[in-house]
Length: 341
Ligand SMILES: [Zn+2]
Image (tube, rainbow, N blue to C red; front, side, top):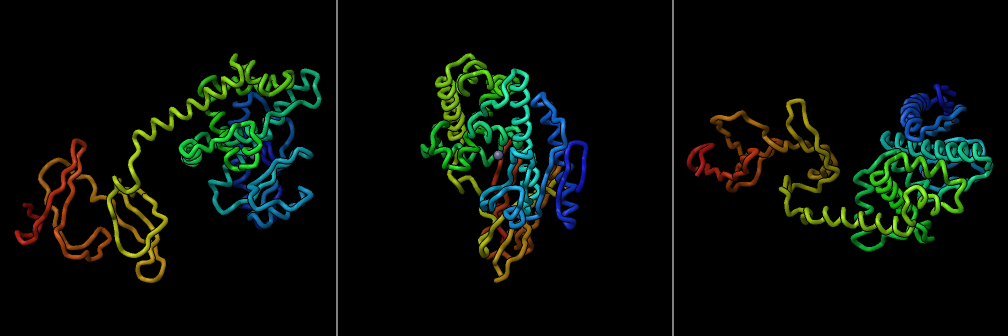
């Protein structure tokens, strides 16, 4: 067991490094959420971590086997947060933050209700609970943008209150996240806090949202959906077809998992996996020859591409990119190396 100022971490002995990372990220999230919720937790939060999903599925903190699709959970009985590492430290940190938003939200709603003399307060609907855990753990990201834009484009954005959304799983998280984003951008994060502070003395969650925003619930939902459509439409107006604005970097073999990285000299490279010689290998290819200072420069055509491989014969074309314009220059080898025609 490892104890940090606000957490007690439980783990198998061989997972100590992972537990230390979890402790660091949990404390980092604690400091942020304490301010966001304007609330603190008065007891150490038990954090049970597993180094992989198989161990997590067999946890005895829940009286049943955990399904494959569950990435972590917060249980109300003993207030424990239980989560596995799936191999990605980015996801691990995200799940820790996501679950801690649940812990803070649950504690805040209960604490406020207790002050008002209510012992068993109403909780917000699941889309709000999960949406908020996503919004206050990661903010907005390309994945959320992709899911929501796709739902809008193909017309399967589901009503927040619908049972179909409950059954839709991931979409419920993302629609909730999109609503919380709109809500915070429109009304401010203090209004999100206000919903949690006041929910216990309203007849319904919808009433609490209306009271906090001064807008009927239906109107609020319609305004949110309209704003989503306006944002998606604006993004589509700048869209191009896949590949239409791109440059082919290689035709050799089957290539996958491209990642761009910038080296210490500021030059961009593409690193990817390729099966071009029968085995999967990692390849690196320069994305540019880099920037040159203003003046006269001579580039020598070697007949090889940026990774040093001979390219098929043909007319080589050099591309000159400046902040003002881009120009393609055809180099003619018969007139001498590097000359132009
Ligand atoms: Zn959750």
